[in-house]
Image 1 (cartoon, one colour):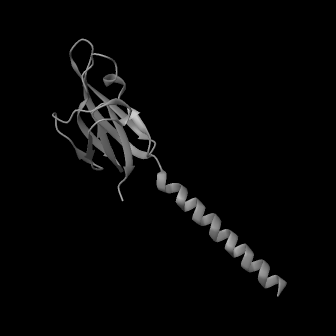
Image 2 (cartoon, rainbow, N blue to C red):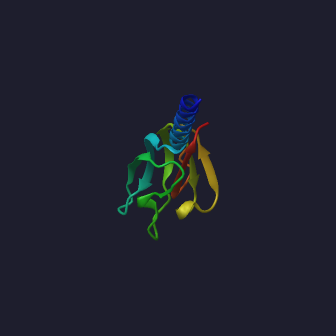
Image 3 (cartoon, rainbow, N blue to C red):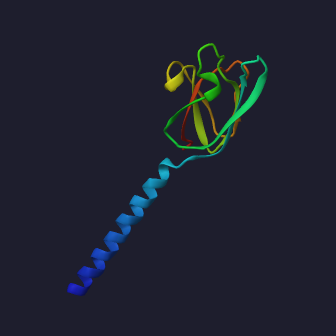
Amino acid sequence: MTRLRAITTAAASAAMALAIAASGTASADAIGFFHYTYTAADGTEKKGEVHDQPDGECIDIEEAVADGTKPAHSPRNRTDKHAYLFEETDCGGQKFTVNADADGGANLKFRSIYFVSST
């Protein structure tokens, strides 16, 4: 009887460890690239990107946060996560969604991004 109880306890511990490991993968990084266009200080349009970003963390677009800069635009989401784009830094203002492996137009202006699971 003691041996059966030890086997049952070991099996329960293994199942709990597996459940904890599986739940940890739910907030995995946004794997892939997120491309955008921004206006440089000299007025020329340039391409920028972020890649393999943490899921659930607000990311400001470096080239679009300084005073007097224009927002980024023309997003191309080549990650495995949905991207929430915000018109202000620190994920403030109006929110727009660009699904995984989808694009937004030149009129979609944003200064920060937040990736979320596609499921």
